[in-house]
Image (cartoon, rainbow, N blue to C red; front, side, top):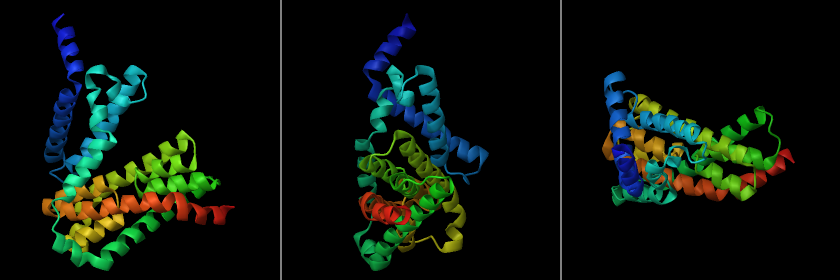
Length: 255
């Protein structure tokens, strides 16, 4: 009786429960990062892995399509994971950047964004072709997913591909995000990733906002706004180029 009452209260205040739940998952992730990997594997990477496992478990338990948000008292997680909170977090992060440092990146920063989108897209498109995809829209969607897991669904929806291809594009983007999180602290000393200028170039080349932000946080939290700034521009450029210019290029190549 008491447990049912608690569940009813939690369901009616699902957004508050979601904040508490996500906070506990993040705390556990950073604890595991410190205890098991001594910080080498950033807590954000562990949090994403746990989130994916919980989403699968929630979907398996309820038979729904929204992961753990299908559990009534955790439905607020769906709001926290929605586009509104995502965009709010990205914009809020960008406010920590120094305008003067941004100006110094200039042409190199802009070039890194364009180069990063084209390079990631090309790798994704080549992998799609190697796996036997021949349709231009499908190849473009998977290539866009290799840019980021946001660009992939946007491109797939614009080109009218099936949900299975969109899911593949999201998976490609998630794998890239996790790899960037893990690799950034490792390669940072080798590539001089220790100042705002290099952080902006790195964010422009990698492009995955969550991966870049988490990776830079493990290097130096002060670098996060600069990397997140260009990574956000990367997402915007990808959403513009992938369903248009890059799609027409792929169409011309594959017929």
